[in-house]
Image (cartoon, rainbow, N blue to C red; front, side, top):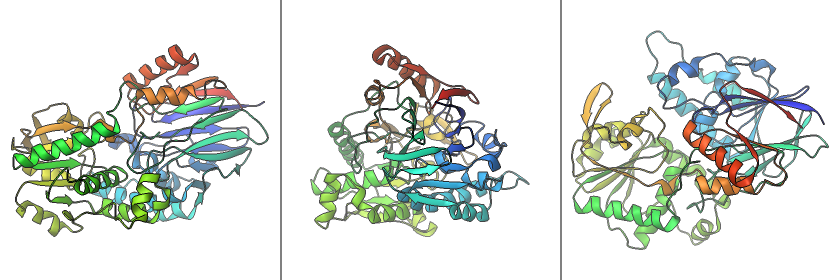
Length: 454
């Protein structure tokens, strides 16, 4: 048995910016290198030097392709990382879309005289170091043996199980754990035999609506909005959330629960991501695969209109209500949704529906919490539209399922580190784990390093 150290450099005290370092005797493994999003000083935080030497890192394991898990990988490369990057094939393909898009968005946010966080050449360099691996394949990373399991969060999302070669004791980094049942994906795999668990806690202190209730609520929100002759805005993450929503809308139209309301998908990135989902449809759950096998395009329906270019986006305003507009970004932190919000939030006939997590400090969180005057691109906007939230479409496990997930590894777990959640949520889940499972649970602080026995 040997000692190793886990250092918590991101996803601590907040949901975004996932970044964990596992240091062995000769090998240093980084798990995720994500962008901090939504927070007040996120721009400055993302530009700071890494608290470790990037050149000293041997391997980077990527849990999934959301920007808060991959967004600083090109900066890591720019600052000297030359090791190997490993993920699933789906994560690699999705990251090829997500990183250039993030770079483009950040370019527009540069303040006078600032250099970009990274260049296009850094993205290309990162992908030259990146290799795809399969679920359950065992591969060697220096002194460690590594395997990936399906975390059920988004297409290709993985947990990393790490142990020393030939040893039994292990640490599992869960990444984000999926909510289930989900419209498209399989349930997260269970973890057993782990000595240490580093697990997420986004919804550690609350639960979601069930699958039937969330679908009923979605249909109800659409029907009410249409009956008022209103515009329904849906800020939606381009990756996973939009695809799950399109699948659900397709079914609602097929079942005649909603009728002929035009739906505009106004997100070029989401349109491209949806094509990747189509390519990997064999990874879907049984229900979704069955529909695909019958020839149903589960991401399209008669009233759907997709808008790639800016001119088509502007023409959406000419379409009479009722109508539904799905656009990014999911936290209203930019993208085309903010232009629609400027136009439509002031009318009480209209509605805005949140179906994903809204980070503290984000514009989406302000609207969700009832702020009546907001500023969009320097312009004051009054929020008179009805604000709706459906948590059942979250891609994250809720509190009870997180507790259940942890309990399945309780027979061998010696310590559980609760991360990737706001402090209230993380602390609540850690206390529940102690009380109900009897396993030591700890909420780390930013920059904290903990020695473990592997």
